[in-house]
Amino acid sequence: MFYTIDILGTIAFAISGVLVAFNKRMDLFGVLIIAFVTAVGGGTLRDLLIGEAPVTWMKDMTYSYVVMASAIFAIIFRSKINYLRTSLFLFDTIGIGLYTLVGIEKGLSAGLHPIICIALGTMTASFGGVIRDILCNEIPVIFRKEIYATACIAGGVVYFLLIKLPIDSNIVFIISGIVVIVIRLLAVKFKIRLPNIYRD
Image (cartoon, rainbow, N blue to C red; front, side):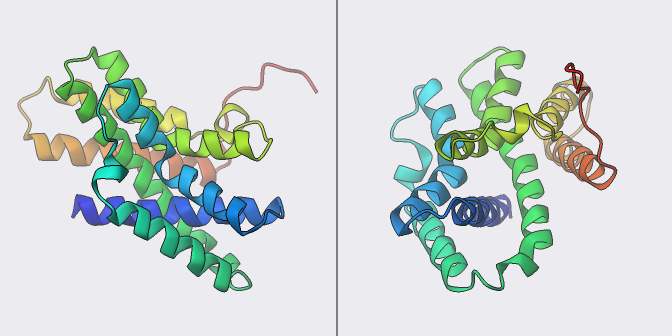
């Protein structure tokens, strides 16, 4: 089930990358590159930092096939893709919840400190978007306005609090993922943002 959600998240991230590339009026190669880095950029950076090589998407070609198929789908149906934005947002939100915990567990497997594990989880979930925005000459969204990385950090903190309790590890995993998802959904629904330290 988690692998299926992982693939769905990859699809969502890839298509969101295509949408950004369309807005920047990139050529076909640019669209494919942006789709790819959005989908697997965070996980790649995580694997490199913990010394895992080859990185995940190189060992499992399913990810590459999914990214390419998603990009082609978005290109062919670009005139109708706006109708899918709500669904893509939901997949993206589920994806960051899962990827946060995948990053945390990989950090734990490497024997890293909990704070570093939370950082790895946040990186896994959000740094594909950071790389995408940098390549598109934009200030990354997570540094500007949206509660995105903050939701990942909160979910990571909840994860480490819960594992101290006599609770089944699967339940801990699910609850922590739900925390990330709920915070992200509420932030978007009610337009909750971190305080702006600059005066307009």
